Image (tube, rainbow, N blue to C red; front, side, top):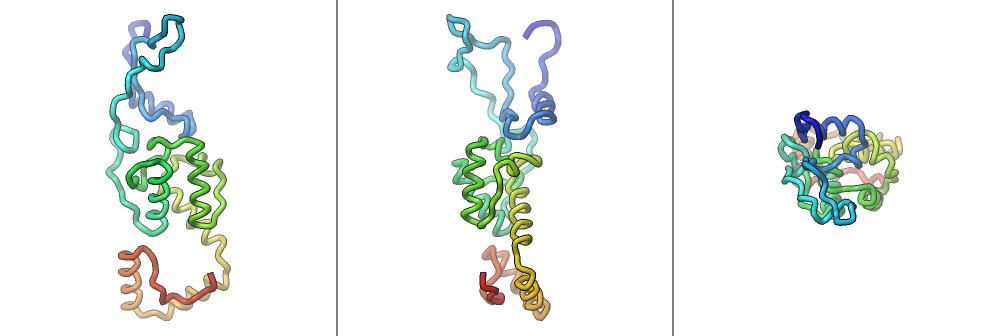
Length: 191
């Protein structure tokens, strides 16, 4: 770094880059150096670069506390992320790329989502539209599932739900909270 200007704040630099780069190109960490290490031939010496300072799980200073998956879709997606990224279960608000993801792993993620939910999600759709989080992906999966649902099937389930008493609804919701899905007493819609 030359001149007398104060070095940039790594957090401010990351925020500046986040406004201009897609999430997949945003660096996980920023490390300020007086000068880049070079080999005797004048080329960048990658082995001599220091390890970036430790950063939190979401890859950004001051990241929010971990939020556990709240429903079956988020739990399934968090499991997929754990497998694809080779990490413990992520927070639903953690950014895929800040956790070490990249475009090739996003392709793997799309394949696993298709296998788990039967939905085609183009990688371009995963890479665009803001940070790729379990929460955002779960909303996308649920929206796609609803769009693919047959109107007659939806009407049948809604009619069944309308016939339930308040106590039965409370029991179903409690069971869903424990098991992550509705019990098998729902009408068979052929899916």
